[in-house]
Length: 114
Length: 114
Image 1 (tube, chains in turn cyan, orange):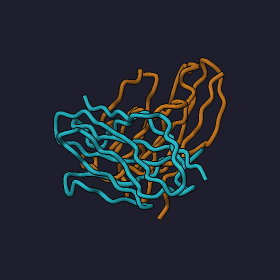
Image 2 (image 1 turned 90 degrees about the vertical axis):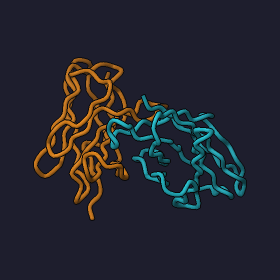
Image 3 (image 1 turned 30 degrees about the horizontal axis):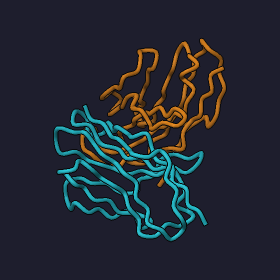
Image 4 (image 1 turned 45 degrees about the vertical axis):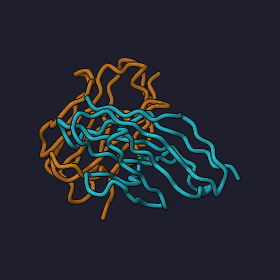
């Protein structure tokens, strides 16, 4: 079965600091991987996705993620945090049995301090 | 282009009651997926509908059922509500039944079961 583990349910950074949110996946076949962001009382918005093209994926709002097969990781980074980045971030992998069935991690809440 | 819309946005039910949640998919999308997001957790896949047929189901009991209509809108029905059914229910639409693409989420229906 597919699964995703997000290390750290809460991450706090200062404005302007590097953002690093960790995601490790479990998959027996090359997966499709996604990062979504959720602002309070809203649905999920796609930040970026990996679909077996380039291993370094650039997304919206300055975020990027690198697919590392040897580490089964897909960590999300942003060089300089903004206050507006404060939200909850979810890593997801699509199922090998149904590519539209997504398995989500438990989420990481990002707090950005002024 | 109209995004994914869900109704109602909030509702309160009592244990044992039944609830119907509605979702209009994004224009041009023929696939609708439903996810349950309990407080503090990531979304969990309930089921997916593609061209009015159920196309994959997660680990949810039969009292969770759904429909998709010819215009690709969808309903999620939950019978015999339990306290643990309290959650944010997210609808997501996409194009294609088996290809991996982006899921476009609505803002959700927040169900509280008392």
